[in-house]
Length: 184
Image 1 (cartoon, rainbow, N blue to C red):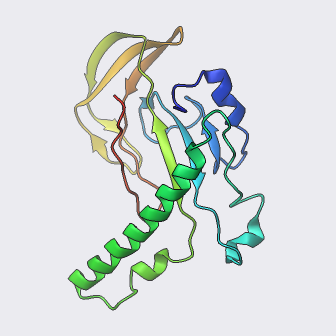
Image 2: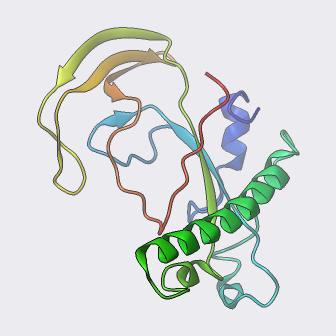
């Protein structure tokens, strides 16, 4: 529902200078060597009262922005983050057990940390103008990626060259869950 909002409405939620909360429009942030047509909205699990990171609020670790245009988005995101936090700790406890590590070697690093939900939205192109393959593209970390399909597209009346759906990139977190979309 948020992705379907008009851009001028979504831009009302592009207010956090840290980039930790709210909306980031297309073209502001890229994670790889090639151009991605993408935007995202970012939310976090609220910090429990007494959490040591509270001292950094409101500049960092602040509350999620309310989104009156999609009122269920923030509560659903916070609920999803709470479930994923539990699942992540259980997963790392199983990995510890499987590898013969002492209890808490990995899972303990996940306790009392901040969790984020970053929902990427990849809007459809108005028109694909050209399609080709780039070889030997250097991605972040010096990794060579061969055979990446790229296209030139028209998007909102602007020609974008060498666009990919998602370029190779590292995530900055300790652990990342990738959830499939339910929308084409």
